[in-house]
Length: 172
Picture (cartoon, rainbow, N blue to C red):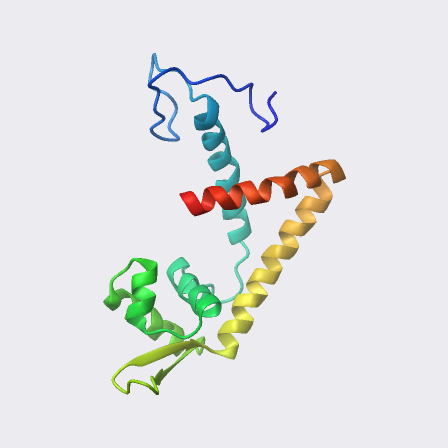
C-alpha cells in the first residue's frame, strides 16, 4: 500500500494521459502516478461531500441558492449581475435565485446609494444565521468523524495534507 491508501504508485507510461474516472477500456492500463492519486482523491472526496450535504434543515436550499448566500457572506453586498458573473450563470437565472431568497427572507434588496439605478443584494440576519447553522452542523459532523475514526497520528497526516489540497483546489 502507498501512503495515499491505494496500491503502490508506478511511473506513468510515456504519453499516457488520463481522461476520466471511468474504468480503463479493455486493453488499457489503469491510471498510475498522479492520475491514480487524482482518481483516488475524487473517489474519496465525492462521497464525503455528498454525506456532509445530506444534513438538510427544513426548507433546504438548492446548491445555486446556497452558493449565492455563501458569496454574499464572503464578499458582501453585490448586484444580481455581479453575483451571476461570479457564479458563471445568466443574470436572469440569478434574478430568479435572488427573488426566491428574498421571498424567504434570506436576502434583502435595496437601491445602491451611489447609483440609484442599481439594486444591491445583501445577506439578511436570517440568511446569515441559516447559513452559519448549516455550516456548524456539517463541521460538527466532520469533527466527530475525524475524532472517532482517526488516530492522533492519522489526524496529523490529514492536517498536513490540507495545504496541499488547498493548492490543488486553486489550480483546478
